[in-house]
Length: 426
Image (tube, rainbow, N blue to C red; front, top):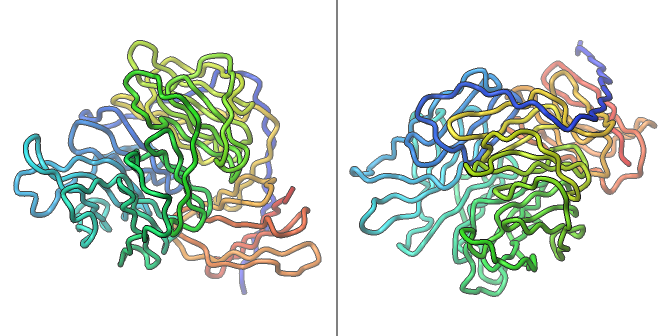
């Protein structure tokens, strides 16, 4: 007989203080500036840092211990491999994108994959074969579908878990320009991805990278040292987001089609911005710059910013308003407080993380382990309105935007266990 566990675990938190706590975590001695953090689940987090090899960090216990991942590139013949970005799939599987070369001579754009936590790395063949190619990042939407984005509109997609990659045809891309180069700055929500691009533009795909559009942020690129590319990008849902270049901050409410300048007050740090997952209108801004380092938070969509601390922060990622990590220079920080700023209901079900709850349509479920599971949603009349196979290796997007507003029961089925959680569609 199946064991039925009904957990309607909800807790309400109200935070009025603006001073949040970031607790330093011990990292290996060779760690430099932590550029990017990829959270697989509350225990498994990967990150990469700049300048000093090996460039990758990994933890499997929520940051209790961090270890370096050695990147031994096969057939490198003494050349260095500079990592531009990292994409973690699970505790053992990850991709890195970068360039193989040295200080003199051609540099080859390459993508590698590991399935054994970085012990070995395998080259993804048949992509970025030109010496003019430049790869920026790999991004997966689920266990099967992913995209690799490079400069000059060289974009590849996969629908078989990365076994094969197909180039996106020019007909599916915006008209090419000389400014079609990108950074690794990207945001993914469900099937949608936004990417910063040259000319102060944003590239966007709503079908997992198969078709792309481009829009202008209308930000004037007049901040020295940044170049004509948006520096920070964050979205709280499919419509509302922020972008910045230097101290210029703009907001969109239509998914990035149009942007409006934000006149803000308080300390805004212009190195990067991140949305605090599951918490409307809440973002952090940060910088590691020695003259004025720090991290700040807004609870009103960027209008007012409050200082969190003056430590050097170079990246940030969140599961929810109580669980997150930030990278610094030679350190990692873990969030040790609730930073929602408002009374907000969060949900957990037998260690599955579900957010936001309530939601306007799109829920995210992070699995408790790597065990297989399925998702089913029922209304209060007992009618099943949705079912889908769970992605046990990362975030699961559950889209109920086509259903009527109200209370639903989410059934998480894993082996002989069934977990039932109340979710609210607003």
